[in-house]
Amino acid sequence: MTIDEIIKQALYEDIREGDHTSLATISGQSRGKAQLVVKQNGIIAGIEIAKRVFDAVDNGLKFIQKIEDGSKVNVGDIVFEVEGLSISILSAERLALNFMQRMSGIATTTSIYAEKLKGLSTRLLDTRKTTPLLRELEKRAVKLGGGENHRMGLYDMIMIKDNHVDFAGGIEKAIDACKAYLLKNNLNLRIEIEVRNMEELNRVLIKGGIHRIMLDNFSVESMREAVQLINGRYETEASGGITLETIRSYAETGVDFVSVGALTHQIMSLDLSLKAV
Image (cartoon, rainbow, N blue to C red; front, side):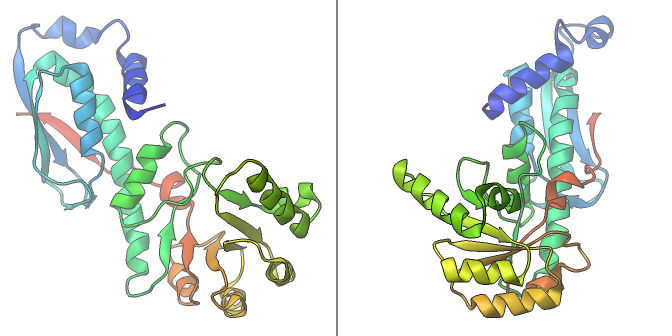
């Protein structure tokens, strides 16, 4: 589903037969102007999406952007102005805010985690722990906040996790099956495998045939030992239970990537408000 299709469905969910409150209280010819006002410091994200919402409601609205997506914002900053039919502005208001507040919350959270990695080569990744149908928007917000995207879905990377290994009958069988599948279907996808302990890591290193190793729920000390053992032969990723307090310690082990599900599923929306002027 495209972003425009998501917006169309979301507008139908909210408006359906009409914004009856606005239709009842405001003349159909009344014109107005509103500003998006920042009420909480953070990283702004989703301005382009908000514009597309206003355009979907009424392409006659005039949208004036004052701040770039991904910028730091402070309380009182004006992000954009929108001008035109008052009913159109009000009908689009909530959906535009819903998108922007969540995306800005994700971007802000990501920027806080990314700051912890400053000066290190380790890169911050998101996960698939996203809101259904909003993954593209939420992953876009991660990038605006200074993070990077892991795979978009199940279709663009092979990711062998613990359940795959267990169902396949072991690490070696899982890797062989993935390589055979890619060859049979003429697919060129990178292979990542999750390991839960040093014994599994050693089995992967003996087997080979992968691109990245995810070290899941390792302690900082075990992570350092694992990274040294891998010694650059494959990309390395730390995952599982990594918090804002521990992320730098994990990164200092030399791991290439740190993935944090909290970037998209444990965030608070940024406080924004659309005010008539």
